[in-house]
Structure formats: C-alpha cells, structure tokens
Length: 280
Image 1 (cartoon, rainbow, N blue to C red):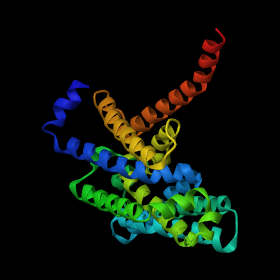
Image 2 (tube, helix red, strand yellow; image 1 turned 90 degrees about the vertical axis):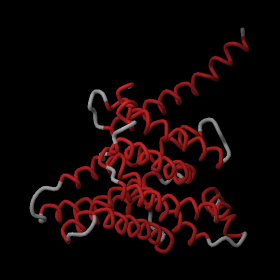
Image 3 (tube, helix red, strand yellow; image 1 turned 180 degrees about the vertical axis):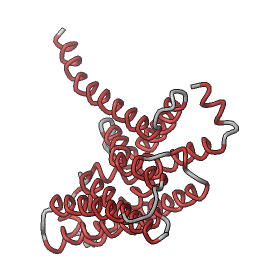
C-alpha cells in the first residue's frame, strides 16, 4: 500500500482516479440514501443497465458514450416513473423490460460498430484508472446539479420518500418530485459508471447508505456517513488493488460488500450479547 501512496504523489492518472472516486462518493452518498429509504434499488439497477443502449447508439453514431449514457438514463428514469404514476402498473415489470431491452439494444449497436473499442468495455466493467480530466469536470458538474436540487427541495424529497399520501395532502407535487428523484438517480448512475461500470454501479449506490442506515435514523446524518463510507471504499479499493494489479472497481465493491456483511452481522449479534450480559 505504501507503493500506492508513493506513486500517487507524481502520477496524474492515479490522482484523477482518486478524485473521481471522491466525486462518485458524493453522488452515491446523497442520492443513494434516497434510493435505500424509498426502496427503489431495483429501479436504480434498471436505469443503470438500460444505459448500455444509449452508449451503443452513441458509439455507432460516433458520439460520446457518456452523452448517450446520460440521455438513456434520463429516458429510462422518466419512463419508469411515468408508467408507475399514470398507468398504475407494477414498476418491477417495466424495470425488467427496460433492463433487458437496453442491454439488447446496446449489444446490437455495438455489434454493428466496426472494430473493438476498449473504452466501451471500461464503461461496462469500470476502469477508474482511465478517468480523464474532462471526465472529472463532467462528474463534478453532475454532482453539483444533484446536490443543488436536493438542497433546494430536501423537504419535498423527504415527504415523497416516506409518505406520499401525506405529502399529497400537504400540497406537495408528488408526481413531479418522484420523477425528479428518479432523474437524480439517473445522473448519479452516470457518475458512478466512470468508477465501477454499469455492472457494479448498483452496489456502490446502495451499500454505503445501507450501512449508514444501520446506525443512524435521520436522513442528513445518513447521507454524511454514506459519503464518508463511499470515500473510504473508493480510496481503500484503489490502494488495495494497486500492488497486485487487481481491477479497481471490483475491489471497491468487494470492500463495500464485506463491510456491509460484517456490519450486518455485528448488528445482529449485539442484542444477543446485551441480553446475555443482562441475564448474567
């Protein structure tokens, strides 16, 4: 691990990777808290996997895959929200359909694009070491938009996340803020794709917030702890993967997953220990 920090001081690509991980942690901490609180992890997964279609079309047309991912993510989020609100259909069905169709469209357009593009594979499976300065600007801008909207409408998002009927009675535009929240999830998915790829994006979006929610009950402290945990996972994953030359994205997720399981086990064992001490 000392080799990682020594290289970090003078290697630009590693500095970009670290900054990218920190920026991704901001998004996953703030928006991931709402995803966990509202229990829409499956929706976030559907949005994440549907972006492959937009990326494949963008590559086929010679455009930026990140722009295609952003458009596809927003479209998928709006379709999911609109179907749920207007047609009263089960979200799980439309999410599963978009998940499959998005992946299929992406594969078809990729197969029709001449040559093999390694950059697209990095978006699929994540390669944080390939994050460029331009990517950092995009990530920072998307983070800023998401955090600004959450700050401006924090009360509305809180009401929509926990009690939609009460929010509607109080005059909150539930449909609008539900769709807006899904769009923020889409923006965060695009940010996280840069770090861990769309295959693993759901884990980094939900695990830090899920761990924080085990110990805290208020939304803002959960967000703060989730951001800190996300930063710890991305930095720790980068450091652990550097020397053995392991995939950084997968190492980050593995670290987060092990921490979540350990935390869950510790929480379940704690009441037993307390009872045992009380009886003794």
